[in-house]
Image 1 (cartoon, rainbow, N blue to C red):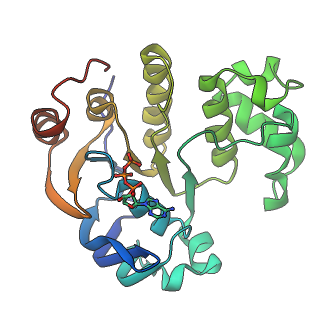
Image 2: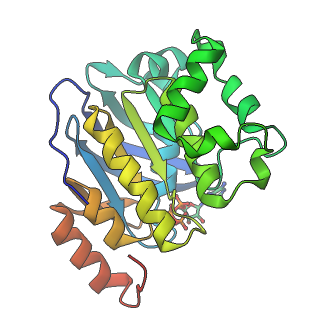
Amino acid sequence: MSKITPLSESPSISIEGLTAAYGRIEVIHGVDLSVRAGSVFALLGPNGAGKSTLLKVLSSRVRATGGTVRIGEIELKKQSTESLTKAGICAIPEGRGVFPNLTVHDNLMMWSYQGVSQSQVETIAFEQFPKLKDRRKQLAGTLSGGEQQMLAISRALVGDPKVLLLDEISMGLAPLIVAELYELVAQIAERGVTILLVEQFVTTAVSVATDAAIMLHGKIHAQGTPEEMGEQALRAYLSGESAS
Ligand code: ATP
């Protein structure tokens, strides 16, 4: 896979002293993280480290209990919808981010409320993922796992995001499909979208990332090049990884 050249016009993400909790149990304990504008940043770490929670805080699905998050010049104040929209954040949650009982067409139409016409929505989505065009009338829940992820990502692209948060898009997919999805992630990055991704397939994440960090016990344990972080992650907690 090709490496991405960072573009200066996309926003950076700056996280300082971030804390978050589920009820009374704090699971993010003061995270400091700088994601360069236009980078593809891979957040690695074992299960339960807090990676998904961090992405959820950035997309306002979990409320921060302290600290600050800046997307470019915009501070995400109490994760208000307005600041999220202004910052151009789009999140693909863990699992399949589609409506399974709606057709591909209807899933895409759910995004036309953003002011993009219905035909534009399909043009944008099918341009990125031509395979979906043939599946237009099919229920999203009957697509293969990889196609459902393509649909979720194409819906996200319709909103022309500046920041894309990807939470384990490989979940439950065969390595070949994962490679195909990440080829698309690389193409999206080339448009200048800043991408923060959480991925269990360390080798795949490293092959597309420009920067990386390891999260452990709710904190950033190390930050560096994808190669360094990948090696460290595989040595430390994934010595048996076979997929890539
Ligand atoms: P995984 O790959 O397993 O999702 P992760 O690094 O993304 O790991 P998180 O899912 O962010 O980790 O979980 C961090 C901690 O928060 C874990 O201890 C987890 O049990 C806990 N946790 C996650 N979701 C909830 C929830 N909805 N309610 C309570 N605790 C939660």
